[in-house]
Image (cartoon, rainbow, N blue to C red; front, side, top):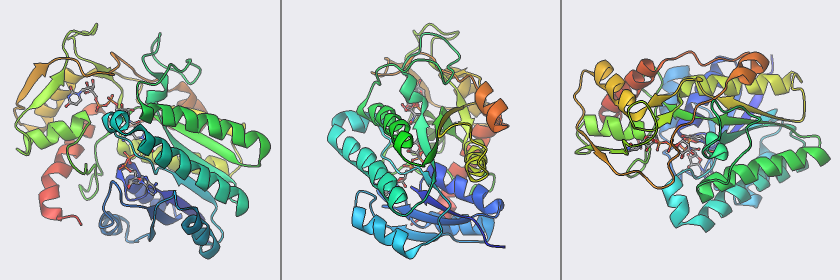
Length: 344
Ligand code: NAD
Ligand code: WQD
């Protein structure tokens, strides 16, 4: 049987690697493009250790339109694309807005142009709960009006969704945008996980790096929010659950089960946890006492956000399965294993 071929942009990144493993488990052939601006190509050896297959890898920047068109000329019969590639550091995007607009918008537009030119119909796009800002009501459904994003990064996700929803009107493209809430955790094998290049921005890598002694202490940004313990609430979701949702979305497009040319789904658990609850859960599963200190609020943080997951549950037939303790245990096992892996 001919394997269906999925092009995964940003495939050496955190969510990309986990998704490749799930795609391969379902019999898809995977081709990866990544510029390695925020990842290492060696992770594909780890993918191979898990799945037995190393995906084909092309290293170039998607802003390079010629390189992208060359790839489509060489690699024929691509059935669908998952477009993960983007810069994602919120604070960095405030410092370097042009870099984020250029990278995230130009890479998306080049991918869309190439899809039209080379007649590839299906694309799954990585969106984010950041498009909602601080919503007026919770949980957030796909119908909840978007607020002005807090950062240029968030703006690129809103703009990307706008572009995609416009493009489907005049082309035969079919698009699914997946709005992830807070992806954390790692593969059960501890062979792949989140690998921040430089200092991490996100809570869980900060927790695990503090616990392992790379950082002296974790700063908790604010305990004076209107929540049960004063710290912010997020909908943390296991990266493997996110990865599995991509396989479901790809199958939906390939089987023509999508109900419109542009669909949007929230990917969350539907449950919100505070920062302090997350720390407690980490201490429980890791048996480590975490050195942390409450400090002032971080600019741009929303107080609380968690997903209404009904649409994804009912329409995609997908549901997040892993709980917070499993997310933190797998993140911890990955952090412990990193010393052994010597990634390049
Ligand atoms: P990541 O940084 O680990 O992976 C993104 C990959 O894209 C990296 O390997 C990077 O080298 C590559 N890349 C960036 N720009 C590129 C370009 N111009 N050409 C080729 N490759 C390029 O990030 P991730 O956490 O795996 O996120 C994947 C996607 O999901 C991103 O679009 C991100 O914005 C989105 N997202 C992430 C989160 C999260 O918290 N991790 C939440 C919501 C949405
Ligand atoms: C979670 C909570 C912090 C670090 C970001 C992006 C969002 C999406 C997911 C891509 C917050 C607190 C954190 C620390 C802390 N990404 N915290 N000390 O900000 O919810 O979302 O990642 O689309 O767009 O904005 O995630 O992990 O940074 O923070 O107290 O050292 O942990 O204040 O309440 P966030 P995060």
